[in-house]
Length: 456
Ligand SMILES: [Cu+2]
Image (cartoon, rainbow, N blue to C red; front, top):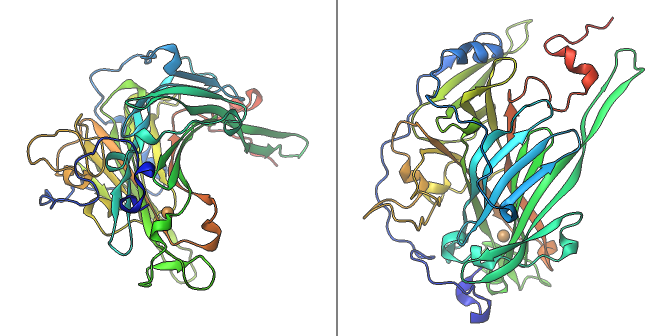
């Protein structure tokens, strides 16, 4: 990944972007993030559900179902087995790469598409080397967007490769849209075992491949028939031969004996999610924490869960039994419960080296000029901070934007060459109360909402 040592022909053909690998000193951080007072839940988690939510203020405007704001080539619509339809628009950004807009979910039985995301995209791939000799912001510093690769039809099995107009680089057959099976969506036997309900789940799958120096990044979005969204980045291609020099102990021998040492490094991947659930902008953010109390003598352990409304900008840290959700200010499911999506981070090794890499989740007030988690190249004004940690300064959230940071510390291994197997990092967005039951519930079980048969 060390671009400075590459022959010119291998460096991306992009205009120089300010703030490359060498960073300017950063401004002092703003006030610490503020969490509103925690609300202790009752004995059952349901106490935090619809009853508690019902008193929350409603947004003044509830937008109707979003109309596709794009022309046919930029529209994706896929009805999956099980009756779920995902619709969205896409466009291409010369720094962020693939951008998805107006992502809607319409399971069977829902009269209209439900907006999940107003916009979603990568917000940085930050790559610091363990020896301190190199540090890259691949999106805004090293031409990630310009590195879009052509995909052969065989690289997009069962799907279509769409043409992408890359600014200054021309047309690339670069966006695969296809479907893929994911195995069981559910399975349940009747009480007497005579009947089995089961369904095989399918996903809509979108991906691009962007080459940045020796690495190739697969940016993947997966939209499942059960309403789950999965975002992942896979790194493949090749280890940088220019970095087979980690003789200082900050690497791993990958050639014969102990000559070629690949330098260890991290890939800190950021996503920017502007939800706009149900077409509104005033989503609410909530943090949940559960605490387990050891058992008393002759008793059993108990667990207490608290809900903390996040009313101001937040730099959040993942923790055991902690999770966050984004709650619609406008939409409820047929049970009267506010719709929401839970953020489910995948395995992560957050990197302590920069303030913006330290935290797992950021929530900031939406601003058009704040688009990249580090080395933000948009103009936010003179001396404005250029990374997400510094945008967390106590502002009240009336239009929250969620940033997810997933880190991977890459200590190379012999198997990393040649080519390097794809290593993945990412997160999921899981529906919570978007529908009143499993969106794939078969017709003969819909009467069981809240009242499954007791059996014998
Ligand atoms: Cu790596």
